[in-house]
Image (cartoon, rainbow, N blue to C red; front, side):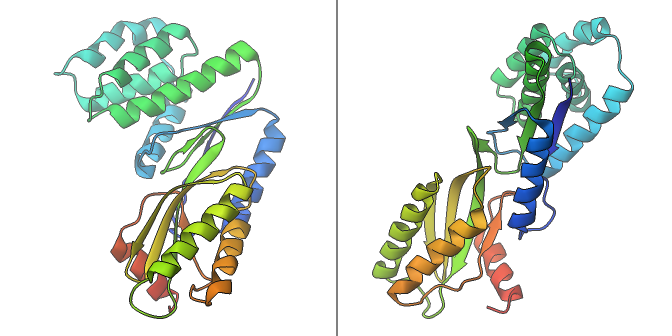
Amino acid sequence: MLKKNLSLLQKKIKMKEDNIYQKLKDILVEMGGDFSILEEQVDINLQVEFFELVNELSENKREEKVVFEEANTLFNPETEIEKKKKLLAELSTIDKPESYRMIEKVVNTKDDEIYSWSVLALQHCRIGLETSLLDENQIFISTGLGGKGEKLRYFIACKLKTGEYFSDTQKKVVQTEFEDIFEKNNCRIEKVTFVEKYVSIIALIPIEVSIGNVIKSSIAECNQYGDFLYQQYLITNVKMLDYPEIKKFFKDKGL
């Protein structure tokens, strides 16, 4: 059966969320199988590099025996990082328990130089194992911010219309109204941060939920208490943004 690696690798900070969701839903329906979300936060560029190497190795596979014989060099500190990355990618394409266990050992070493790469390899191998054992289509969804369970993690930001800072009352309104709307849509807010005119929110949102509608509804509810938020908002699942990046986004929007 087919193993599908679906990596949401947005190159733009501002996602066109409705199109993304529709395409994702279409693929899930087409595949007719379960999906697995990469929970770790892994740099998008590293993900691209990993999947490109996996595709390359899949077209020129070495014998499994040879790969397993070389696998022990993964624990040798003198082994070059590039060789380790190639071995992990190769192991991830072998749908066998011993391959999974070998990669898992690498993950458990917590080696900073190879940790994120080994996490990708472990997830990729697990999906392959499930596909082989269950004889069902498996979809692997990965984003820069990861996720949890059947939810993807997003970074969201909104801007205050007037004043230099959010007042205590405005902060309370934002936290209360956003949490209420998000909970009603089976979403979970992990963190809310106020910096000058901006509020950033980190949240977990289910695949099937239209995030645009959830955010717009939250802003509308807040604006019933003084119309203090711009309707435009920033959203990404590529990476966490810092203050200058958030400020630039809204400035580019003319706000």
